[in-house]
Amino acid sequence: MATANHLLEVNDLTIHFLLEDGVVKAVNDLSFTLNAGETIGIVGETGAGKTTTALGLMRLVQSPPGLVVKGEINFEGQNLLDLSENDMRKVRGNKISMIFQDPMTSLNPVMPVRDQIAEVILLHQNMSAKEAIVKAEEMLNLVGIRKERSKEYPHQFSGGMRQRVGIAIALACNPTLLIADEPTTALDVTIQAQVLELMKQLKQDLNTSMIMITHDLGIVADICDKVAIMYAGTVVELADKVDLFKNPKHPYTVGLFGSIPDITNDDDELKPIKGAMPDPTDLPSGCPFRTRCDHVRDACAAFNMQKTDVGNGHYVKCILFEGKGV
Amino acid sequence: MHKYILKRLLMMVPVLLGVIIIIFSLNYFMPACPVARRLGDAATPDQIRQGRDELGLNDPYVVQLGRFVGNIVRLDFGDSFHTGQPVTSEIAARFPNTFQLALFGVLLGLIIGIPLGILSATRQYSLFDSGATFLGLLGASIPNFWLGMMLIIVFSVNLGWLPAMGFDTPLHMIMPVTAIGTGSAAIIMRMTRSSMLENIRQDYVRTARAKGQSERVVIFRHALKNALLPIITVAGLQFGVLLGGAVLTENIFTIIGLGRFMVDSMHRVDSPVILSGVLFIALIFSFVNLAVDLLYGFVDPRIRSQYK
Ligand SMILES: Nc1ncnc2c1ncn2[C@@H]1O[C@H](COP(=O)(O)OP(=O)(O)OP(=O)(O)O)[C@@H](O)[C@H]1O
Ligand SMILES: [Mg+2]
Image (cartoon, rainbow over all chains, first blue to last red; front, side, top):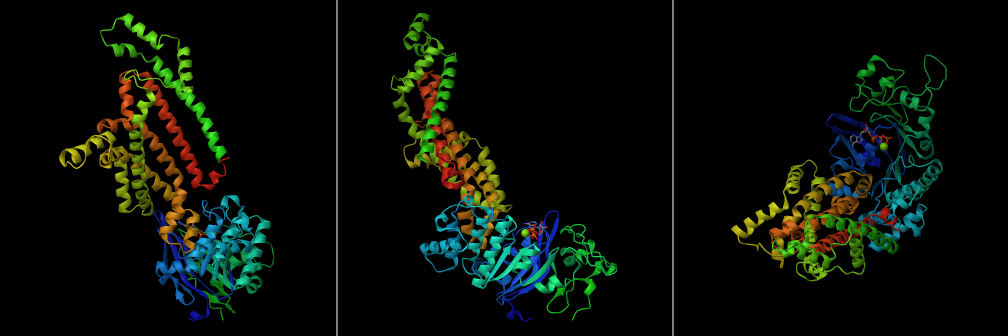
């Protein structure tokens, strides 16, 4: 494959949690690519394995019980899974950084926010402690927190401000790739908009590539270039944003958009997706979505989850499209 | 902060007053008579009555209590019945040894307990963890007087390496401090382990790793500082326990300490010493508590912001 063309190329990434009462198959044969400057949205229900995927990319999945079973994470032409822990530390926070899901718990409660930002700067940039503090205050300013508050502790800030601190930490070393794990889910609506606007702005100014994890299609429409729809640990559909919104293929994606166009019957009634995600310790054989799919057929249980290219880099993993690719 | 300390100091007054009333009452209702004890079996009832009159022991309870409190307020703690010396100088002569014994015991506990607890937590379920857990159980269940005697048998009697009596030089201190600190080390280790285990799973630790921080710094700078509160709590409690429980160790190692003096004074029904001694220990314990609370604030800004 033309690895060098992509900033990031994830191939067949599989991450399991080995627990006493079973194996949680959190991420299964997950693949996607991302070009420099691009933003990909990863969309999926709770428990789909989004956070695990993100942590997997940073090699931060807690182990044990977590285990990267197989796969490749080619970043700038180098498989991150081959790096030593020492070399990986030089990537984390520097070239790839992450904004975490829950701003209330992601900051160290006993460290002033300024020091938490300066820490990552000191690790990766050739700066004295003093310079790092100045840079940290600049970063805070960038995310809209006044310098006078930089010596305060996380508990003195609101959730939205803490998330801004998280963003400042993630952006402090000007990363090539930013992974944002539902950066706005824990925030209320007005703050959500502010934080998103801020991220969009920063992405433009710093030309950072981004992986935006969310279950909010509005955010995808707002900020992403392409979208990966995730179900039971795998990407079931991957496409350019416009293409995906106009022309969703996978029944799950169609379901996510709220209406299921039925081939045999023309009513446009809106239906929520029935049922719940299968237990990741006990995934059904073949296609994991078949237990909830309206188009299910016997062959689905034996489907090998091959992806089909339906044109323009629009990929689907569904038996309906098997052999109908371009 | 100063206001908070002042407030806490003022709050000690009612606590100490409570202690005074309780110990005075216990002493008052104790059936033993100090005069009879001092004069011995040959004393006639008349002599005893006269002795008691001189000491005011025949006055009503309330009068005696009032006099006792009044004396304390004037910082007059009286003289020992036994030695005739002022109680304050008797305590001052003995307290430093007891204080050092308890302090070094807790320090030993911290020096051993914290690193072992951290290692146990970062290697949960490993062989090391199991070994440390076993030693911890052992350390917490061995009585310190037994350990003291074993140390004397091995290192003084058999090997002749360490002096078995006294507390004058660092060499003298090794065995008593070990005997008294082992239990604390075990308790502090268990607390460190569980507190660290709780903290190394927290999100902020993951954030620190995501910065590219090394595991050592993640554990010490991030997790340990957050894990300190319960460790400080048990260390403070242990200090109080050792201060009050030093008597056995003092006896075994023949240390001139407050604990031993207090027990001897009880046998002699030396009321002024007993009363002032207990009061003094309660005072020290209150200060230790205050120090622990101030340390909380030093470690955790969320608590500090409440110290107004
Ligand atoms: N440390 C862990 N130990 C065991 N199982 C885990 C662990 N972390 C995640 N899992 C399991 O892996 C699966 C995927 O979890 P993950 O957190 O990646 O989901 P998610 O898509 O991020 O969900 P959400 O939208 O709620 O954040 C879940 O079934 C979860 O229970
Ligand atoms: Mg998640």
